[in-house]
Image (cartoon, rainbow, N blue to C red):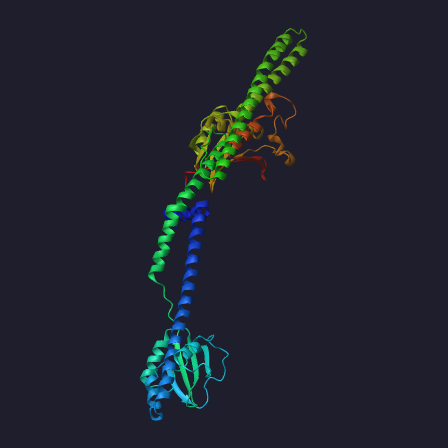
Length: 476
């Protein structure tokens, strides 16, 4: 599939999944359903109106023929019946009524019409029968072949038709039988209906719904973007409160949350900074006093302990700064960024191999992310002799794999090593074990970028650190 087709397909999918798209599609579907129901009701009522008009017209015609037959001499009756008959209406005179039951009567409308036209017929028997028949039925009997062909042509294009039979008692002790058929009117889709639907949909969507949806989805999009940026540790300004009441309340709640979290992190950072500053003075005093100890072994042990305490204080301050930093974000190719990050590590004498399969753009704070990756890669070099780093993209995620050839980590400790001051190396040596804050700082920084880090033991031996970062949203 060409790129532009993929982009269009992705755009249509995103539109259909968005709140704006779903509301628009729902409105269009509701309008179309309402239009179809209206057309169906219109066609049904139109069909009923046509049937009623034809039935009343036939009733009036039958009443007039009955009155004409009663007034004409008997030798004229056949001529009158032939002249009155047509492909769809047949008149006949019999001694008995052709309608032997009235189970399908027309509710008395046809009968009342005949009685109004024929004075003195209030008490005369009139029988009416209505039923549907298929268009493949034969035409009315007794009509010429040309009229029969006309009948079939009229009935061919219609699904069903109505047959009405009348039997009217005459003063001549005979019955005038009327057999008539009229088809259902053809289904018509007037152009005005489509024009009306298009105009209504355009007016509602363009003038009203689009404006309302913009007021609704615009603040929601800004809120979503601000929440994502704030979750990555970026500095987010207070959002303007706008939109419907519910959206305004949600925006205000986000602003309050942002203020509270910012104050909390700032207060904790100032507290740790003050604590670290206050601890430096007594540690310095202890160092001076330790230098005055005459016994060399005791003096060296005290100095080593004080230096370890100093390193822990410095690491704690670095950990707090990593949480509260406000370094500006920038979008960089992650493959190139990882390659540059490893250059200093290689110059320090470590063995690091970098493989870049993909180079997607990632939004990050460069100094912090560089520090996090350095901590992980240096751990791999320290405990696994070397580090093999690979970068690839999977969907909307950039994955960085850092593998070593060391002994690995016990399964039950794979998650615990991210806790502050947790050390697998128990010698307490700063050269071999550090302070136990490196992975904690790395995870804090990666999570502040909306990413994740996971440690896995390799089947072939060694440890694999998998770092996942979201790809820049503007990249397709």
